[in-house]
Length: 120
Ligand SMILES: CC(C)(COP(=O)(O)OP(=O)(O)OC[C@H]1O[C@@H](n2cnc3c(N)ncnc32)[C@H](O)[C@@H]1OP(=O)(O)O)[C@@H](O)C(=O)NCCC(=O)NCCS
Image (cartoon, rainbow, N blue to C red; front, side, top):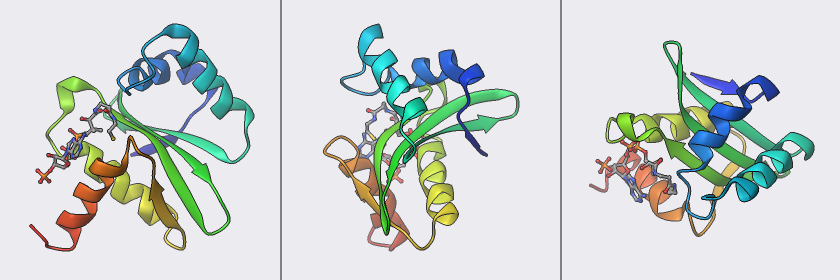
């Protein structure tokens, strides 16, 4: 299930964020987390399975859309459909908004959408 980020999840969120390209060093990670903590329309979610947080989604909310900036899944749980399920839950959460991608998240989002449309 999707859980909104809070300060007590900082360490686990930084660990999950570090799997994103460009978020490799501690300073960059701290800046990204700080941005999510202090910018009202930037929202961070964690994916909780049982007692564990194993995935992360970060988005920038706009009026009619949101941009997915960060998506990551703990490597131990990849290839099981969790990334796709997180994206689907997010879209259910904001059904009236368009989901936009960045250069980094475009290929994965397109993959999730193409499967949905039965293009496979
Ligand atoms: C990208 C990531 C979140 C995918 O998580 P996951 O739980 O393994 O993904 P899923 O199992 O739900 O995969 C869903 C589909 O997306 C495909 N896919 C996985 N990673 C992909 C990627 N980086 N680009 C394009 N497609 C991708 C899968 O092959 C799968 O396709 P299928 O349905 O035809 O089998 C995960 O690999 C990750 O954390 N990577 C490191 C962070 C990163 O690089 N993020 C930027 C890319 S979003």
